[in-house]
Length: 206
Image (tube, rainbow, N blue to C red; front, side, top):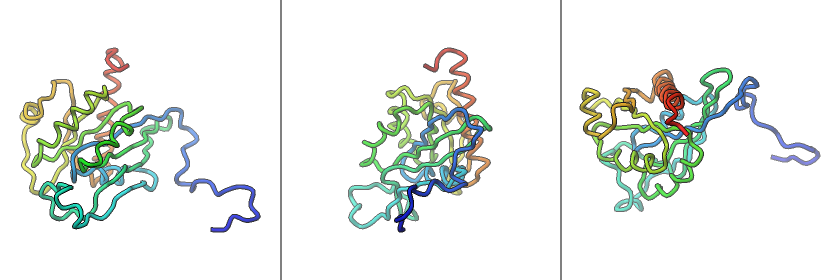
């Protein structure tokens, strides 16, 4: 694109501009293991065209990357996903999806920095993947809710069984979701915001 003769660069697209009514912006991270639906969630709920950094999985990744039995997945996030959603006219959430492959987890600390809260996406077929994820959030002091993404062949468990299996305290919300659906993904974010509000009111959120 040739900008010769122009004193200014083109600005963002109209649909990508921040609403003029916005008064506060909050950083939220979407975390979880490989293939749990982080990129899909950011893409389904974002009101702007999401930024993705997916790369095709190749033979070179064999023995390095773990596909956790996900034979149908052909791409993986290598840096982050980014989207935005207006919760109210005044409150905007910036969404950062983390890479799922373990060799990219060194990027997580930077993505966690400045985050007010997090959504931990869980696949009930691979609950063990979630422990490292939640441990890192706890170490960083980032409050989180757990969202159980619905997969057709994934077993379903009562909430209290999941709470016990994941070793979660009684106050951490657990919610079912289908990240392919915008309304479902938005419900997860509203649950997180409600949880953060309750922590702030109790003085537990610093």
